[in-house]
Image (cartoon, rainbow, N blue to C red; front, side, top):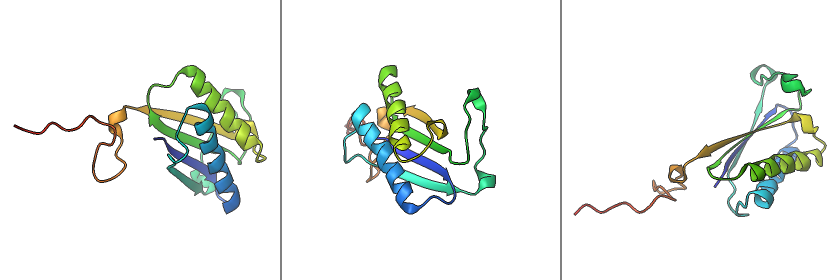
Length: 132
C-alpha cells in the first residue's frame, strides 16, 4: 500500500527513471513485504532552480544527481525493517550507477484507515456501521 514519490533533477532518460522506480519497488517487496502488485509511484523531474537541497548536510556530499524518495506507507514496521529498506534502495540504485550519497529517503507513516484505492471507500477500515 505504499505511495512512492521519486523526485529527480530534470534530464534523466525515461529508461533510467523506470529502472529507478523498479529498483525502489523491488526493495520494498524484498524488505518490508509489499505485495508485488501493490505498486503506485509518481516520478517527477525538476528544473535546477526548483530542486533545492543542501549539498553537505550531515557531512554527506550530494550532487545534482540526487534522488529524493518519499514513501507513504502504513505505520508499524520495525526500525530493523526500515533500515533494511534504506540499504536495499541505496544498493539497488547504486547498481544503476547512482552514488549512494545521492539517495535521500523519507518514510511517511499513516494509519491503515487513511487509504482509499478507489470507489470512495476506506479500503482498509472496518466496515461502516449501518444506521438502525
